[in-house]
Length: 212
Image 1 (cartoon, helix red, strand yellow):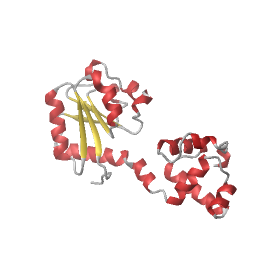
Image 2 (spheres, helix red, strand yellow):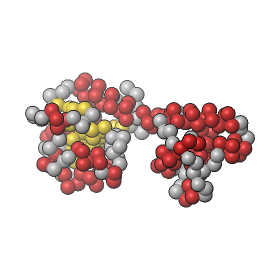
Image 3 (cartoon, helix red, strand yellow):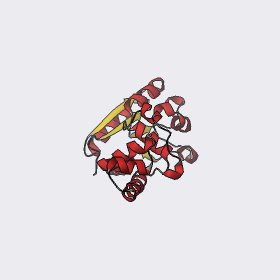
Image 4 (cartoon, one colour):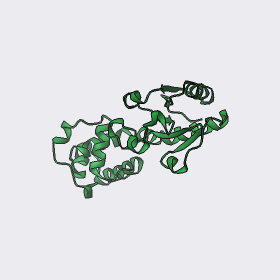
């Protein structure tokens, strides 16, 4: 089972102690490699704990606390759950339409093999973006920094002592690896990953999307 070096982070949001602790115990036995598990029993603590923990996988009772709403949860930018996989924790009948926005479901009757297979599938998908970032070469990172500072291909080539053709090739590879095809998107990525600061972006007007 492939695993992020830091392991995966899983939140279990369920009011029932028996169901919540049982799921945590099952995960600990079924998942290979390091896994960090946070249990949340009260809806009042949900947003604060989730935002702080930053789970890769969120296992939640669709009726958690009688207030949980998956659409609202995903739309809350403060929670930063854009890369989190949502799993409905089912202990009884749930209308199919309620489950449409979940990435998967876990039933209380699922066995360890089923649980392990599901977490394996979700964690591999969740870590895809991180794997892409790791594949960036040092030269590609240097080029990203120059691009988001507003440097043109010609200026980057001169600074790094490379040909413009080489710069263009690197930029195509960066776009392919990160699935980002605009300078604005690349700037957001660079800031989010600590590659540049917001102040550095003010050094010069960024190039247009056509320059990317």
